[in-house]
Length: 96
Image (cartoon, rainbow, N blue to C red; front, side, top):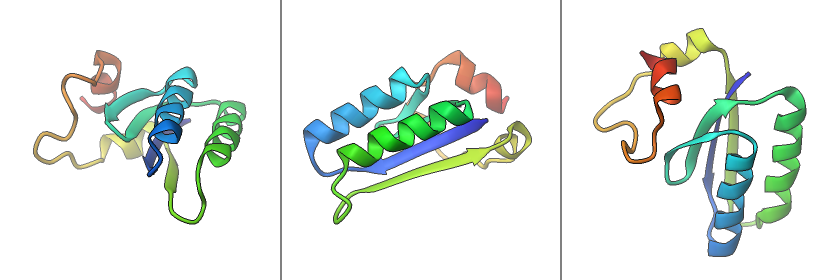
C-alpha cells in the first residue's frame, strides 16, 4: 500500500529518530516532516509501533494515511508541493 506519514514532534531527538524510522521503512521524504512510499502491512505495523514509542502522546502528533495509487494521483499539489531537494524521481513518477 502507498502511505503518507506526517508528524509534528517537539523533541529534536525523537523527531530525528522518527525520520530515520521512516527512511528505514523505505519511505521517501517529501517535506521535512512528511514521508511517502510503499509499505507492506507488516512494515506499517512495525513503523507504527516504532513511532508510538518515540512520541510524547500529550503533545506530539503522527498521521499515517494509507492510499491506493489512483487516490494518490487525484491528490492536488499546489505551489511548490514538494521540497525538490528531497523528492526522488520515484515519488514524482507516482504523481505524473
